[in-house]
Image (tube, rainbow, N blue to C red):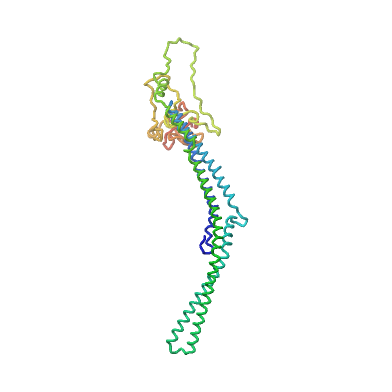
Length: 431
């Protein structure tokens, strides 16, 4: 900026406008990061909710189950912390930058900022007297160089004329007078040039002092911006760095404590007492005939109608005990009713957990059989299959029921396309 070239201060003036735009850039940066924090927080919450339900419905039990669920609890707590990060970025850091920008840059009615205009006018005022002298010096220099050029041309003509016989003495005299006049012009131009340069050099120190004063004011303004920016970035770092948050450390201390409290022996003992040889047994005893005794059989309530006419699916009330369990990665519900007796004769589950965890449709192997048997039914409502082993159809579609409704309210059937699968029994009617 202290270069002698006039107008070379514009980069310093532009830096003020750049500072305002950089505030906008930082606010946009914070908004984008806050959006990421919010999305991550929501993803953790959704993941935690889903897996907590799957674990609770699945076959895992006891203290190890609690340890597994504790992992989803960790996600909920970390989700809250990232939500707090988002709030801090927007409510504290963003607002801090916004307010500083508003206090530091004052817009004018005619456009631009007061600070920019003051800096530019300060530089112009400091440079104006020196710029005037500079212009006078440049004009004098140009005139001096032009006079030197004319003198050289005149001297060349005079020298050439002496070698030519056609030039008369009178002409030679005029050429010589021209050279003398050019020498006089050169001397006058030189004196004028030297005087202009001297005057320029006299005002240069004052010019430098005035320019430095304005420049220092711009430096002070920029120092405030840089210091503020560093301060804000430290605030942002403090909000982003969860490792310095005591609540964050507590989450993992509690998770580790819960996991360490899991006991295989305790869980095995519980299973033995509830489903193994240690469970309570009502051994058969002799009973006299009682004609007044009645046998009440508990029946499962049929799926009820939903709010929009379509009935609730069986999976919305009970967990279905077949492969591809509705809403569960497990092959059965841990709360389903088992036989009162512990016996080696219990029937094994028809499909393993691996088959229900993204495996093939358990009905695909039967796609080539049962072509002739079954009852034709018509769909009363639209149904979109929620699992791989469920059928999807529209109201009015016809399909074939292959097996009667099970105790959970599901039927096995086949679409006319040949696809086999399960569907809610109360979504269709016989044709």
